Image (tube, rainbow, N blue to C red):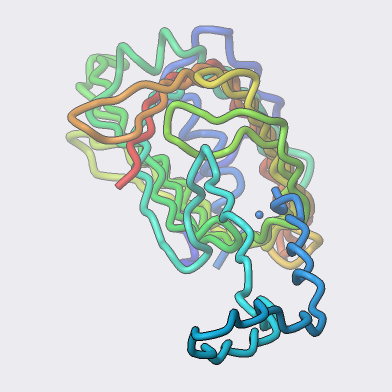
Length: 332
């Protein structure tokens, strides 16, 4: 992490930022912390028993006088039937993918999140609250998406939330341009530890299931802000990486409806002091251009508590992002 500009002055009083905060207010909070950083089995079919065998008596007629005697052929004993009867094969009504078949699912989404929290160092504190309406008004660019590769038993995924905000203001007769770039990049792996078939199949042709999948990975957080003025530019940056462990649960309610949830905790003092992430989604399956597709609607929340001890004292950045999520998942 880069050490911030020591020319940034910090107020000795507590900064209370109104609910409809500006980017400059959030930047002040960032600066406070940046200053301290440098498979039905078929029913068995009984095999028919071989017909009983035995020696049959020879038969013949008494020859009449003048008639030639005809020799009678001895009757051969019957041979046992040694043909093997193969039970009929059971054909599953819902073909399941082989565990070796890998599929990729692409899921763009929109997270209408608000941001609330505070930053402090050596007793100096700045509170901030940015509702989604404010963030949307100042939005310059945003990208949110998830890519997952899975073979039905193991899988990997990458999730990214990137947002760039900008705001122009006039402060004391000076024109200022405040910018904030926030990035949350998550990479993880999971394994299907438990699966229970519920009967029937989904629209995708797979069995309806209830499944539990432990997961683990890393989440990188980066917050960077700047203020451009005629008198000069000021910028600051805060970033850290959190390891995390969690669990994912999903169940097929019907052939089309699906319910899924995910939760994880991390940090453990190796990145942030503590972090927690939770999300739940209701999904609806359909076909889109021949691909298995699911529309999702849900809610997500992410809490992070980052702390560091520096020459200036204890630095802290604590924030919560939460809000509704809408997205689409397409399986290839």
